[in-house]
Length: 489
Image (tube, rainbow, N blue to C red; front, side, top):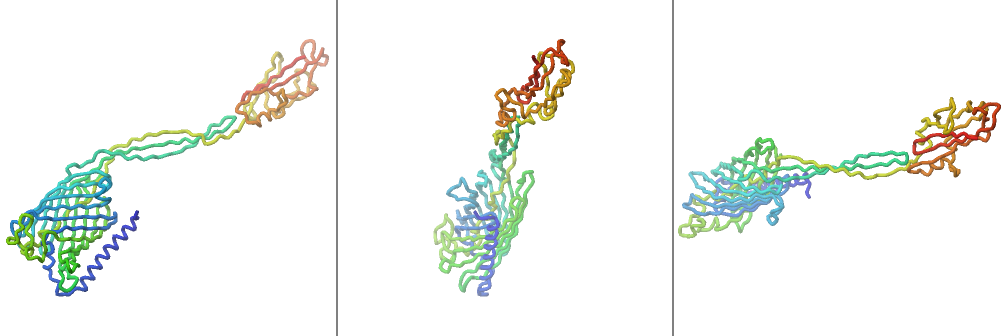
């Protein structure tokens, strides 16, 4: 696909080449062939015109034809005309193309030095969004020996297309984590938001007019037919085309040069065209191209001339030079596929899917069991009641000497790392396996000397009647713990 900058470059080169060729032909021509009136007779017979163009928006092809229906006199013409312009795609695949096709009936008559004409018809417009519109079109013309003026207008029969929608999708991802004592799991929350925007397409009525001047151009060679320069300035207005409802006016300038380069076919006309237009919808558009016109139904130099479809009798035929000049000028009208999209509404739907991105097993640690480092652990003394016993202890601290049981009991440290289960497995070893849950009983190692005297009244003292033994066990259930100290004989 050609890039926009490349298309602009091609357009400018084409226009430059056209101007260069025109100036070259002017400079090399015989000065005796510079008569102004000579070019006027180039539109004295009907023909089919085929053209191709390049512009900032790409390329375009066109065809135009004017065919006579009746020639009441040498100065009058009833005609039927048709034209088409393909902006994108092909006529063989109309569903994917942008084009304009039109047909019309008209009347022209020479009055004094000029030709006045009126025409009316309809066209079919296919836009770049694939919608079809039909329009009424009409115009008026004047072709004088120096001045050319045209105006045409168009009114759509159906201004608005059916509603259609376009969808856009936005995918957003947000992470989240869930942390448990056993693991940290990372999730990706993928939210897909689909926005359906409903539009309709609108074409507008409008008017287009231009005024131009014509000048004779020197022939390309001695004895050849003279050409013609034409320069135009025009303006146009699309009524209510803006999405806000306002008009879109524009301006246009155009330069044309007619040449007759074929020695054996002197009625075959080659036209070089360059134009520039600007409006707020299309912006600035530079276009350059060529048109080739081939006569049909007769010859400019033929003795019988051409009188129209209703008069083929050479005895009553009117030669084209006897007042027929400019009667077969092609109809020039606005065929641009200009439209505007109007947003009607938007509908958004969102769907969120949560995917597991990864799991990191963190397990329990010595710092996380029993409520974490520094968290007090409740202490209970099942089956034993005595005043002054602690109600909670903190891991890592020293359980005092249990003074209520006597002054000589050895201190015991509540060290979680060295506590063991009944099978000899330490708490640290249990945690190293990163269990998803933990439920265990571990025992606080009690030094053998940790015993105290049993008195007859149940209290410790120097004159006991036997000895107590003690057992400490830590009951772990996840992050919740409790310490039990059992005392017995």
